[in-house]
Structure formats: C-alpha cells, structure tokens
Length: 131
Image (tube, rainbow, N blue to C red):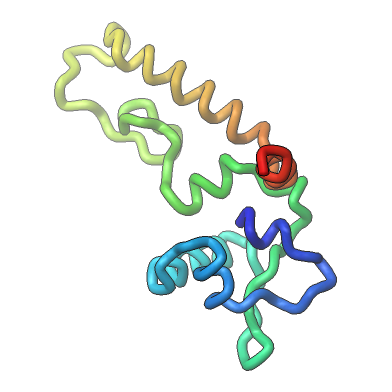
C-alpha cells in the first residue's frame, strides 16, 4: 500500500510484477494480499496488458488500522479481547477478574488508537521523511 500510495494518481495502474519487485514481496503472496485489499475496497484492479492496481480512495481516507485488519485480521493479541473475533479463553476462571485480559484490552485499545489515527498519507509522509 505504501508503494502504491507513492505512485502518481494520474499514472497508469501499477503492474503486480513491479509491486512485487519494488516491495520485495513474493508474487504469489502478493496476489493474495492485493486480492484481499481489492475486495475490501482499498484497491481497484484493471486487467490486460496495461492493467495493474491503484488506490481506490485518497490516501488520507485509508487508515493503517483498516489495512492491517484486512491483511492480518483482528488487532487484538489474544482472542478474548478481540472486538471482531472474540473467543473465550479456556485458561481463565473469570474474564472479569483476569489481569492479563485487562492488560491486553489496554494494548488492543492503544494499538487501535494509533493505527486508526494514522492514515496511509501519514505513513507515506513518515517513510519519505526517514528516507
């Protein structure tokens, strides 16, 4: 996504092969990632000789949290604190009294706050500033 965010919005779609080479991601793995991002509405794909991928939305409207949730799944480190994939913990006697669960809820909330508050535009600007 960072690579695509750095491409001109007026440019032709970026071929998957170029994304794979420039981002150092194996092509087969990249195919899966791009399909998930396309299905989630972050990318538009175009078939054919001049085909490829481009962002479907402006970079300031795409949060890093949404990208990570799309590719990796829930942000929670343990399922008993997940907002989207909750599963009870088999080890706890009482979730309400579990100190680990309470700590993991704080980790989840802070992680979500930071990632949801960081747009793809922010991340691109940070990457360019570091380079």
